[in-house]
Length: 130
Image (cartoon, rainbow, N blue to C red):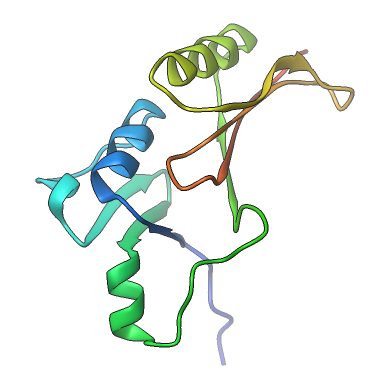
């Protein structure tokens, strides 16, 4: 048997329009009118990022419930320069995203920042300092 190769990330959202607006600001592109769809996808390099509403999840698994007690996943975006980390963080915060960590020079050698998406998930932005 060949080993499966991961190539997609699925994110469950409460409000598709808010999620599409947020992730568009992060640099993802969506086809068609993704804002009103129950399922939307964006290509990120070799990966598909798939978004499904909570209603889609309960239609597949009626016992599904949203995670509680903290974010359920985190997505990280590589930025081209440390200045880009600051710029994307500031733009998302200006658009209403809560900041978790303002941009900082991390001890592991990256410029790093974190905001929350509309569903409370952590979204990181980073770039090597050297």
